[in-house]
Amino acid sequence: MSVVCQNLKYLRKQKGWTQQEFADKLGIKRSLLGAYEEERAEPRTEILEQVSDMFRVSIDDLLRRDLGSQKDNFLEKRRQQKLGSSRQAIQFVPVKAAAGYLAGYNDDEFIEELNTFTLPMLGAGDYRAFEIAGDSMLPVTSGSVIVCHKVDGWEEIKNNETYVVVTSREGIVFKRILKSNRSKSKITLVSDNTQFDPYPVDMEDVLELWQSDAIISKASQQSRMSVSHLADMVSQLQDQVSMLKKKIKD
Image (tube, rainbow, N blue to C red; front, side, top):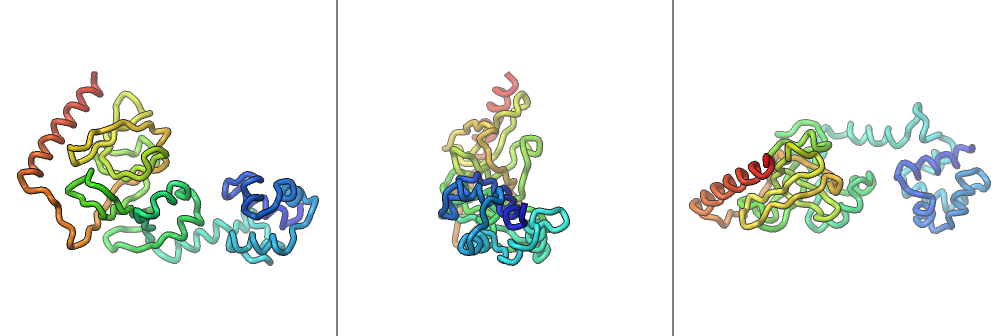
């Protein structure tokens, strides 16, 4: 297989695209893309230009370098170079980008386009920051930014800690997580504001889990709860947790 044909197939698979999806992005028929990948036709210059722009790789590299070889894995080298250029880069997901994040959370190109910042109190790691909306987690106010680190799966969840949970149904939410000792297939999401009821979520619907490390709020933002209201909320939350633990044991 010629290098350029091999590179087209490699780049497509790195994105997890089918031939039809890649062909649609290039504005060509799937059968033509198949002919390119199977070395039955040579891609035209305009196709190479599109691929070059799409993957940020030069046309010369497309034609001459085996981008997918272990010795010369172009995408991995580019990723490592980006990581090495900054010890810490926290991608920021504002509320207005929430819908796009659900579609692009697993797309390196989408993530690379997000604005980034650093925090001196955090070391190197896989961090992300999410702007939250609504009053379900008062006294954390709407518009606050939750800085988190990535958590992989049920086993790494710490019971009754706060997380940004990304699900296919609910989108991006900031909640406490209660784990069931009897099942790894579900978690319960709990709001600190007791006016919002807890609700269960199937782990198969969870796209990402991010445990909160820091909360950033504007200086002008103030909690709308009095001290007595806050004390009452804590008491209700404790009762709520006790009831949930009892249900889990039953």
